Amino acid sequence: MRILQVSTADVAGGAERVAWNLFQEYRRAGHQSWLAVGRKRTADPDVLLVREAARPHLELSPHRVLTRALDPIAAHSASARRVQQMVARMFNLPRWLRWQLGLEELDFPETYRLLSLPPARPDILHCHNLHGQILPGGGYFDLRALPWLSRRVPLVLTLHDTWMLTGHCAYTLGCQRWRTGCGRCPDLSIYPAIRRDATAWNWKRKRAAYQGSRLYVAAPSRWLMEQIEQSVLAPSVVEGRVIPNGVDLSVFGVGNRSSARRALGLPDPALILLFAANGIRRNEFKDFPTVRAAFDRVAAMLAARPLLLIALGEDAPSEYAGTAEIRFVRYEHEAANVARFYQAADVYVHAARADTFPNVVLEALACGIPVVATAVGGIPEQIEDGQTGFLVPAGDPEALASRIFQVLTDDTLRSALGTRAAAEARARFGLRHQVQTYLDWYACLVDVRTRTAASSGV
Image (cartoon, rainbow, N blue to C red; front, side):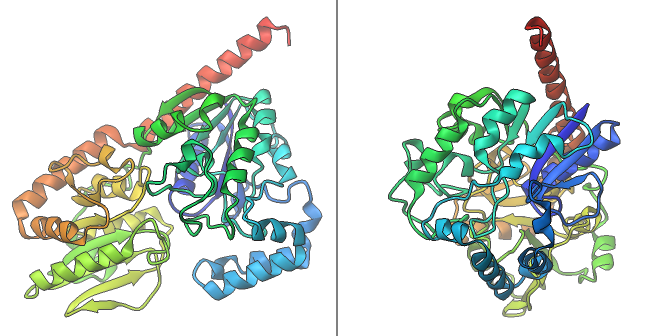
């Protein structure tokens, strides 16, 4: 098959990694596989740049060259991000005005050229996250193109958060206004943040954009699919499937803890916790303050033993709770290196305020590491409480610390949890299973489209 996927970026965390893994696996299986992205960070020839595809001359314009040059720095520097915003504002006044009014940007005419980007017309178009940061020059996909695209090729849409259901936010954090039209938003700062409350208008524009679409919608968790079924997107869904994310079990698996620690330069006698997120402290959904508060409590309870928390996903100086250390490690792209961090850890900690079906939890389970996580979103569908890890309420450092302490101080329990975690990951969360599930679905959709076209004489 010829498969074109659409994603925010080729190399990043979360949803982008899901699309990237599928892209690579399809290619390995002999399919023609392409990945169209809003931001391209690799030199892979099968990764195609969506943004400005209809206006290639803009790629060499001074403001575009400058903002792209700042991309690597902006990932870690607020000052660089402000410079990007200022440049985008100066060179694109209409978008800047819409941003000031709180309107989500949809004006990306290059979206209508998606099917012509690959060297051959795709049999399947599979879209992932269709939003970017709501800033002047941010974003890359026009939702209003969905009806047009879905009439020309089977269009699979995998949601990784709730942005397509709301007036601006990627996670609603308990707010229910998205069910009836948003407006009077209780928190405009939730990512992707907006400057003024245009949430009712944004919600209506999305509803209008979806009308006439024929979408085959996937979600990695039942939790997210239930929200889709109650949302503004529901009337456009021809078929919905829950397809859990998968991890590469040839990379993420049980390893030797001492060997992993030596390779990473970590102290072998220490009790080691791991927490991973892209942008640890600025990621509002991952709730580092609760992780930090729980760590302080555990450090006080284990004052006589060396304790280390690896915070993977941000480059920053170490912090301390007495003699216990929080060591920040910059975001790691290489999966094999990431796997070593799991294999070196005793417990994986995930204190999210909201999450759909985090890859990091699956990776930890696959490496045989017990997980202590919050019972939010799709996480309870990943962890069997008391069997492969423990679930605690969100925002409760006492409960989080209590379970971490329990696992760290009971070697028999920790070993049993880890053994069951690895077995569960092998049985349910392998990448090959995810890939084959999508491929089987694609084949059905292409067959239906072919038979329908034949019967209508098209």
